[in-house]
Image: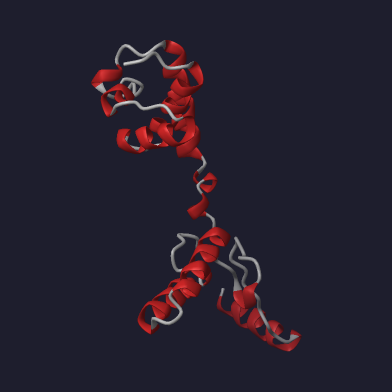
Length: 158
């Protein structure tokens, strides 16, 4: 097991912090740095695993920082953005255009995404799309003669 350069260690820590598996991380390190490492060596850089209990404080902090940032900002993940999802659906549609069943499923998925079916946002508006009124308002529509008549009746009773 060869000693790894600091940039490779940071890459491994960040990859594991965003929930890549050790196997995925091994493959990414091999592609990026042309360095062959084992899954077991990779697991030593994950402080949430038993093998990573002796990880340096600096790398533990980097792991925590990267994981917190990853969890707090899901829009940094390309597939979480509507434009990226639609672009990928468009690519799939162009590849599978001759398959009618698959094409229809892709079109249906795009329509669902555009229609907001997969969001948990709700918009509440008042009458005619206007703002909600926060207080109860009672409006009385009466002529002056009707008001006088009601007042006279009330005065006569009491």
